[in-house]
Image 1 (spheres, rainbow, N blue to C red):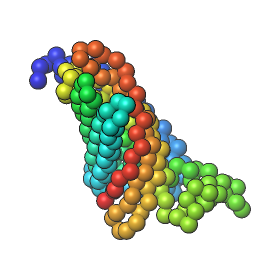
Image 2 (image 1 turned 45 degrees about the vertical axis):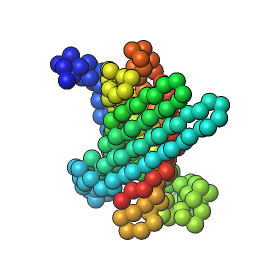
Image 3 (image 1 turned 120 degrees about the vertical axis):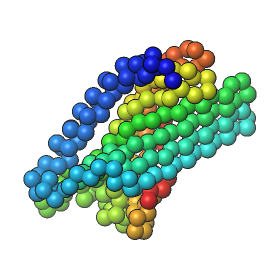
Image 4 (image 1 turned 180 degrees about the vertical axis):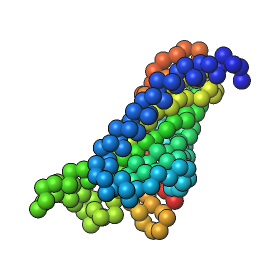
Length: 214
């Protein structure tokens, strides 16, 4: 790995790193409005769990033929109250009759869990309780809705010999089903730089994920 490649990575990702810290500070300021919550919450670095694993497979056999595989794996790098910062690796492979391309991405995923609970007013009929009841029904007290950001980069792979940047957002919900085990469903949008056959450009990706957390 050459020094030039490393310098390129540092130059491309410096802005994204600053954005990550800004998002974390914003979420901390919003998600932890009271002194009581701040006292009860203890910063936890690299708790590792929950670990996550998501997989998506799609194969089209007609007009045109294509196969798409996406795999994500992540761990928790930081937790503080309702703030959770995850580190995620994603592998994405797209096969058609004319080309095959693989994409590897590594990004940070700061999340604000239970973000709708900021709407805990008015006292007699809180808005957040109404939203939970409408969206989750009998699981309203167990559901953990979250809002997140994605900031990182793409790693050189097949048909791609240069790194690129990546950013996006996500919204989803986690349902605990047993002690230490939950099901997670989310919708995420990413915009990333990719070099395909020596041609750099920005690509967009919508991904609906369903996976497990343990």
